[in-house]
Image (cartoon, rainbow, N blue to C red; front, side, top):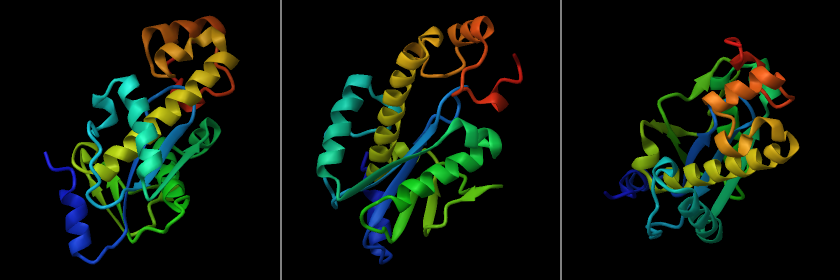
Length: 201
């Protein structure tokens, strides 16, 4: 599959600098939602580049380093659990992605956004953009962003595992697993839990 087709289409329409943007951590019961934005050099070949969900943790870590070293610009941003509760997860996802785009050292002319949503009640993508369903499998830039977002969030949850060891965050990364629910029932929520996600408890 040619991961550069979407970028080429954007370049052909006069968008010189195109970034890909994706988020990680919309579904967990705890922790931040992360987003990343990446501008790659044109037609850069990164062997193994793919949707982060299709890669092993080790491969993601390897690609993370390559992407950071070889990209024209990259940025990672997040929204805290408290803000997710105060607004909603869709708005938080949009805000995290726009913050990642705004954090790029070079302003992109156009953004390729993973998914089919570009705004919520309390946040929106304001950079000129297109939404791409399954974009992390179709665009090199979005795939790169998906890896940076996923690795960044996983590393953050490992830090939280050291701070709140009773929840075993290193094992489930905050997602709604059987183990996570067991620990929640045993210990109750901690400061990084998303209270609006815990209504079943």
